[in-house]
Length: 352
Image (cartoon, rainbow, N blue to C red; front, side, top):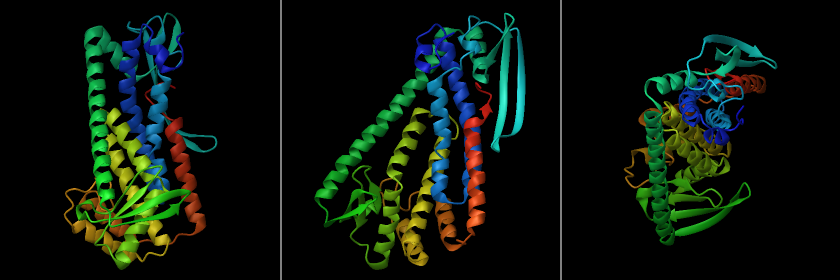
C-alpha cells in the first residue's frame, strides 16, 4: 500500500486519480466544513472567537489535502482505474463522546473480495479516467494549477506595489509615534494622503495609518479600532485567508468565507474599542464619516471596507449590544466549540 501522505502518492502510478479525487473531495469537504463553521460562528456570539472558528474550514481542507488519499483507499489499490464490483453508501448524523456532533457521509467499494475506502472524488475520478482518459484529466488539473499560480502572482505584485506606495507615504508623514501593543512596537503614522483613509498594515512591525484630518474623539475612536486589529493579528489572518482563497479559487464559498472573516474582524475591532472606553456613538460616527468619504486609493482592508449591508450590520451590532450572563455566554461557547470540533470529526463523502 502506498504511503499515507500526498507527495509520495503523487509520485506513484495513480497520481492523476489521486489528484482528481482530491479536487472533488476538497470542494465537498470545504462546503460541509463551511456550513458547520458558519453555524458555530453564529452560535458563539463573540466576533473575536468567530474569527478563529471561521479559519476551521481551511484547517480541515489543508489537513485533508496534505494527507492525500487515506491508507486503504481504492484509488491506491491495484484496482485503481478499474470499475469496482460493489459499492455502499452510509449516512449518519449524531454525536460522539464527548458530545461532539458529526456528519458521517461515506462511501465504500469492494473489489477482489476486499473492501476499500472510497469517496465521491474517487467515483468522479474513475468515471472520468475510464471515459475521458488520463491526458485530458492532466490538462484540466494543469489549468486549475495555472489559474491558482496566476492569482498568487497577481496578489504578490499587488502587495509589492502597496509596499512601495506605503514606503513613499511614510517618508511624507506629518507625524510618527510609537506605542507598544501586545509585545510589538506599533508605528502610528499621521498621513497627509487623505485618500488612503485609516487602516492597519504590517504583521511583525505593524503600522496604523491615520489621516491628518482626524481630530478629537473621532481620532481616538479610529485609533482604538485599528489597534484592535493589531492585537488580534488581523493583517496576518487576512493574508492567510486571501492566499488560500486564491490557491483554492475553484472551491465555492472560499471568497464568501474571506468576506465573513473580514466582517467579524471589523466587529471585533469595534468591540475592542468600546471595551477600552470609546463611546459607541463616537465610534459609529467615525465609521459613517469614513464610509461616506470617497477613498479611491484606500486599501481594501480598512476600517469601513465592505458593502452597505455589512456596514449596516456593524452599526446595528454597535447600537443593540446587550450584556449577557457569564453562564449563558459559557454555554454558547461550549456549543460552538462542539460544533467546531465537528468540522474535523465529520466525513463529507471523502475519506474516513
